[in-house]
Length: 210
Ligand SMILES: O=P(O)(O)OP(=O)(O)OP(=O)(O)OC[C@H]1O[C@@H](n2cnc3c(O)ncnc32)[C@H](O)[C@@H]1O
Ligand SMILES: [Mg+2]
Image (tube, rainbow, N blue to C red; front, side, top):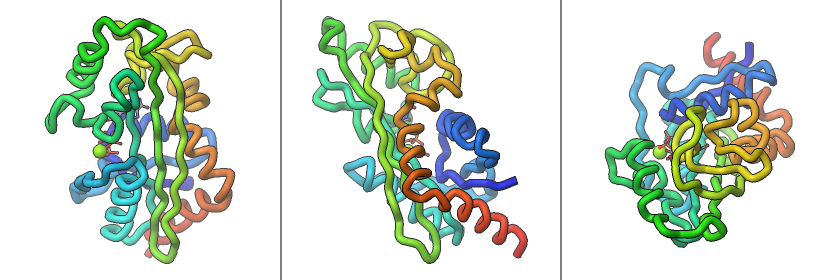
């Protein structure tokens, strides 16, 4: 079976990528599956910078082709916050729960039509002998006043998707993959570089057989 290595430590993202890659017959590995602990410091100020930073650092360390994901939530009433700081919105040791609490507090009293937001995702593909390439996707929604649903991760329970009349956390992983920012970015990756996924898989297989 083909495999792809995603340079992430986020278990929620892993599930999203599994929903995206399993239908293609591709197994997903993440940084949690390798022995050394790799945690890249995200010093960039844009999703693109951070995605490239994570992809190139891990690709250099392991000598393999990898895909990194940098993503986040932009809330219009908060001038685009938390944006690239989504994972650390409520502090460096933050959790999804604390981040959601902070977002809901910041939006207290803001009416429904002013609660628009979007998820953004930038995927960077990096590896030996290739130029790093990036692909981006977004997904529009509205921030609810309370949590709904238990699927997904991060801000999913407060992100209402109008076309589905449900929050992201009320969708199955398969449903989310069809409309999400991550799914949109991956679709572009597949379209523009249709052979890339296969190459990534083959390269990992070659490395394993060495
Ligand atoms: O850097 P890695 O190891 O990939 O994991 P991370 O959680 O730190 O990931 P990011 O730096 O890209 O931060 C993205 C944050 O944005 C939020 N986020 C991104 N995609 C999301 C999604 O599909 N649903 C809900 N929240 C999401 C969530 O809070 C993430 O922690
Ligand atoms: Mg991160």
